[in-house]
Image 1 (cartoon, helix red, strand yellow):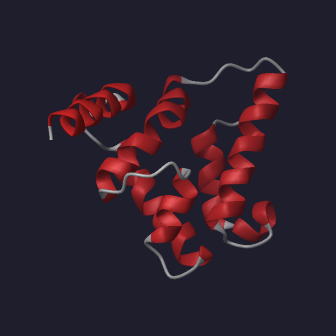
Image 2 (cartoon, rainbow, N blue to C red):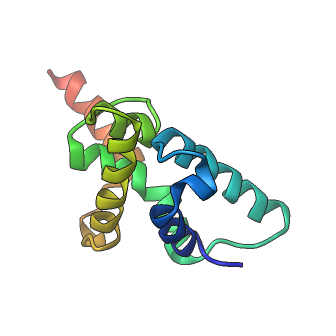
Length: 122
């Protein structure tokens, strides 16, 4: 079975084959289903996949300076004109995420507690 990133490359080149249309929402639902199916058959995530599942959302929020409870697909969609543009932008962001300096990552729990402490002081 291919890794998440191998599969994403296939989806990027032929979104209609996997998603029906090039849609950020359909892509996120596909990824959720893929992750679930792998877990059901006992396939453990690679380190890179675990990194994506854990850190993409907080990295994206920091990268786009958006604080919200929305999932990453909706965050990207907020910055784009439509589902297709958001789909294309996801792959640009994914490349940035993969190439990022991981030492600069912000732990989402620490970031949340720091934000709450700042609000208490203010």
